[in-house]
Amino acid sequence: MTLEEAKKKLAQFGQEHVLKYYDELSGDERAALLEQIDAADMTILDSCLHRENLGGKGVITPLAAMEIDEIEANRESFTKTGIEAIQAGKVGAVLLAGGMGTRLGSDNPKGMYNVGVTRELYIFECLINNLMEVVRQADTWLHLFVMTSDKNHDATTEFLKEKNYFGYKADYIHFFRQEMAAAVDYNGKIYLEDKGRLSTSPNGNGGWFISMKNSGLLSVVHSAGIEWLNVFAVDNVLQRIADPCFVGATIQKGCAVGAKVVRKSAPDEKVGVMCLEDGRPSIVEYYELNDELMNAKDEKGEPAYNFGVILNYLFREDELERLVEGKLPLHIVEKKIPYIDENGCRIKPESPNGYKFESLVLDMIHQMDSCLPFEVVRGKEFAPIKNSTGVDSVESARELLRQNGVTL
Ligand code: UTP
Image (cartoon, rainbow, N blue to C red; front, side):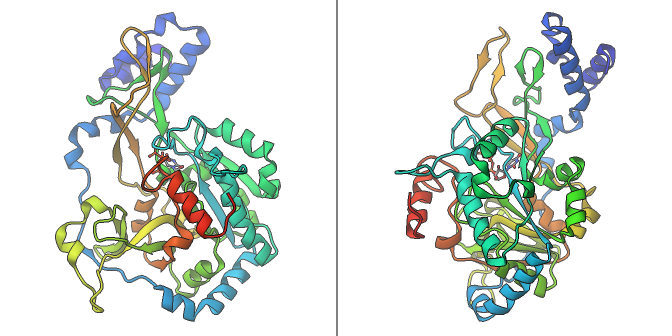
């Protein structure tokens, strides 16, 4: 993009200020900035000024989960189906590790966080250890796709290489980068993170399949014959990955997606819960759950919206390809965004100072025709690390790891 073209685009979206330092930049820096301006989707930026217009929910009704007793009664059969699929190479895993982990506050990628106490035990290591259990059980390697972002790609890949992938077979690990989106102040103006760089942040975890496709990795998926992709978050150190029982249950029930869920600890717990929205599977966020929904009961007299998602989904891959161009809703999230101020000084804010734009994997559930919410025991499979102390923290995860016999 030429400077003239950039000026035209910026004028159209009221973002001319990002060229403020253009004259001070070197030739390479100018070219890089113009490239960034060209790539940035500026049509979304002013939606942060009209957040009230962002899509409301449709009609919410309950979606029953497969509960523990039913799972236990069928464990053997589900597990057999799952192991067969894994041994036939039909299951791959996708680690979503492109997030910034700002709440944890570490400068490194979250997976590099050491949760060990008397020894080193990294978050990535916990996840790979969990996946290795399935590798041993099925006696076969599974392809593991790892999503990073521009902000943490080098650190993530170098760390995992240095640690020899914690014993995972390197040929079966594939990295890809997610796209970035510009971050803005409260008036919708793009921040500069440097004189020659727009401030950008990862565009949310909902773009994972498009990014995987854009990176060319579907060739691996196709040549390996992968039919199911188990997508999971970096921060739950207890989760089972490619869990054969879960895989088998989703296959046997003929669903397009399976979602691991936990029973809510309290009606107002801050987790998104599974539901039907206008008759299709969906997730209603805790802040969208009004009193009527919170108090609704099912036919057994249990709370009707009682199963929270834990960001561990098993998608049928052909469905993802069919829907890949479908638009996901935009989420506008308040964040702390580092920037340079009008005097050219770098500022690292202590509290949120603007918005970033994200799409979320949970919205992909609504694109699917059918979903199996699959209950797991909270204390055994849900130890998310979002914060350093308190709820969903390093402290609480350490306690849960200990309870599950992991030496820290
Ligand atoms: P979170 O919602 O916890 O976001 O991500 P985050 O950015 O990691 O953390 P905070 O909010 O800044 O503290 C849930 C999962 O989705 C991944 C994260 O890496 C984590 O596994 N994620 C999130 C991405 O891969 N890309 C994104 O753009 C956002």
